[in-house]
Amino acid sequence: MAPAWWKSSVVYQIYPRSFCDSNGDGVGDLRGITSKLDYLQTLGVDVVWLSPIYPSPNDDGGYDISDYRAIAPEFGSMADFDQMLAQMHQRGIRLVMDLVVNHTSDEHPWFTEACKSKDNPYRNYYIWRAPAADGGPPTNWEAAFSGSTWEFHAPTGEYYLHLFSKKQPELNWENPRVRAEVHGLMRFWLEKGVDGFRMDVINMVSKTYAVDGSLQDAPVLRPGFLQPAFTLVTNGPRLLEFLQEMRREVLDHYDTLTVGEAPCATIRQGVEITHPDTGALNMLFQFEHMDLDSVPGHGEGKWALKTLDLRDLKACLTRWQDGLAGQGWNSLYLGNHDQPRPVSRFGNDSTYRVESAKMLATLLHGMQGTPYVYQGEELGMTNKPYASEADCYDLESINMYRSATQERGIAPEVALQAIRSKGRDNARTPMQWNANSHAGFTTGTPWQPVNPNYPQIHSQAALLDTNSVFHYYRQLIALRKAQPVLVHGRYQLLLAEHPEVYAYLRTLGDERWLVLCNFYGGTPVLDLPYQVAQRVIANYPSAGTSLHNMVLRPFEAAMLRLE
Ligand code: TEU
Ligand code: CA
Image 1 (cartoon, rainbow, N blue to C red):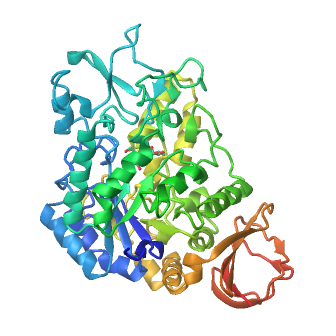
Image 2 (image 1 turned 60 degrees about the vertical axis):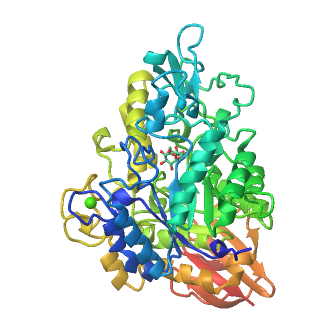
Image 3 (image 1 turned 180 degrees about the vertical axis):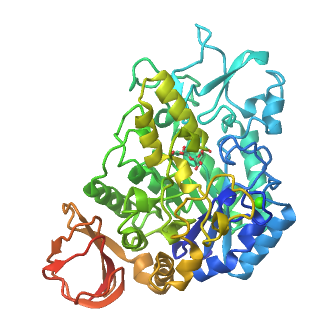
């Protein structure tokens, strides 16, 4: 059994469109990534997760794929890919690709074939249903990007299912030919030397209704409109069966890192899917902690904003730490290409931007699991300023704004405020490399404007500033490789009810570390019964080694080795 290198690794996520443009067309590309591998090696990351680089109409930022075995021309050629992979491997960096196989693009040949007739050999690669008795869509389900999950295909008189955009028809995993196709395309990339996959909404490939074919309407959270279908359809009865088949057919034959993106996943499912013996994947991206600052069970989902209560976050992350300890594995993340920037969402992106970015990093990188750093997080990059809905590039925000203001009578400013807080474009503004035009991202016009704060926040300055967020991340990443207590130590929450401070212990043998995070800008006083042997890393200069009546500074964080 290959050693679980992925347990002590730190993964860096690249959203290629926004990372680095090498040819001046305003779109990031593979040669741009290759030109920044020394930067990633300096940061010390072990693995790169690359968001989709395949041919795509780009209805959903590349998550609508029309050819799984090629490179999108705007990102470069297969030769550019091979060069990038070789350069990564030369630096000891592994590459994990994004496997988006819950759905394809409607421009994928499988789907264009399936639309030709109801008895086309590819028809059952997708999920079709006859119209309801009233001629309308089969159920009242709302798609993640607004509108019905059912799109009518007039030439064949049936609806097809899409949980995301109508240009992303759901693949029918009940069809063994579909699963065999997926296994084949996985082998294609693994044979090229790729080191694993991040699996897009993988817990949707088995759908709850598929077993008996029946469909039921979603419960009505919002009278008079369509209803969110995610929770209804996700985590179907054959999920583990499909993933174990994938493990037998493909994954067990390669030394890989696999992480399944699993919206709505529970801890039980986390254990079931990531159990080293009976599971199938190394780890999951769970979403429970991403849903704590939105009103639960609200028809508006993530857009129904709620102030996070730190105690909810402590309880949630602790449940996952305890729940997977010894019988599965966690991913650790606070941001990605779908989430707003953590320093704006959970920290303070003005006065205490540097301190709070370091605090959030300390909180995450002290836990048990595999940490994920999303591009720009290591610089403390912030959310973007949206002046109006014209600043939205992502169909999720564009569709929500239109549907909310035109169909549901929501005030434009309320919809825009929700987008400012949760819009995915916040994380998709170009990487900020230096203070030159467009932050050094492109010599052309970027596909989306660079955040106007780039003169103050960019990697060139960060590399030269020993107190930068970058160098703090670099030290945290080095610690994980050097300190077994961070990888294998038992996690134990302290001060569960404290409203401002997140504190936990990591213990391995006689090694006992205290991770201390003041989550807000206040100055709480702590009195903990421990003696500090060493202040391993901190975001403020030391204020003594006593933990008795210790006054924490705004967003203060530290990892302390205890006596
Ligand atoms: O995201 C799935 C998912 O759950 C997202 O819809 C997320 O909940 C939402 O975007 C939060 O705003 C994956 C990809 O990461 C995302 O980029 C794709 O849009 C989606 O699947 C469809 O492929
Ligand atoms: Ca380019």
